[in-house]
Length: 132
Image 1 (tube, one colour):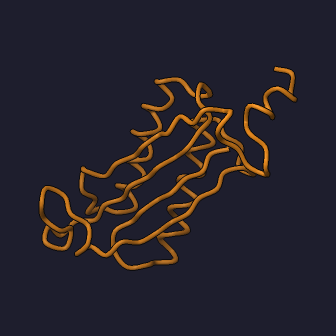
Image 2 (cartoon, one colour):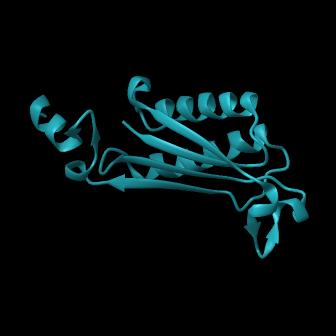
């Protein structure tokens, strides 16, 4: 049940937004094993002249960038799965944005099951109810 926030540099682009959401959702399913019905994604755009890397704006650098935060329930993914996710998301975003700056961050946030959930229930509660 991950919640994903993606920041993209540049002006809003509906086609890029859809491709980004589809790509991230597919990788979240295939690499991290999360179920599509509970993957929530938001996408926000930040102007290239307002995004700085190394003290220079992306507009100055002639580059694009992204930042992705994904919250997953702690202990549901291995270090290897998370490392693969970072590699595959970065590679996929580089295909979507050929001018992608290498300094585009991905943060897999391991949230405690007792402090994270949806529908008014924590993931800890869901785990206990499942009898696992």
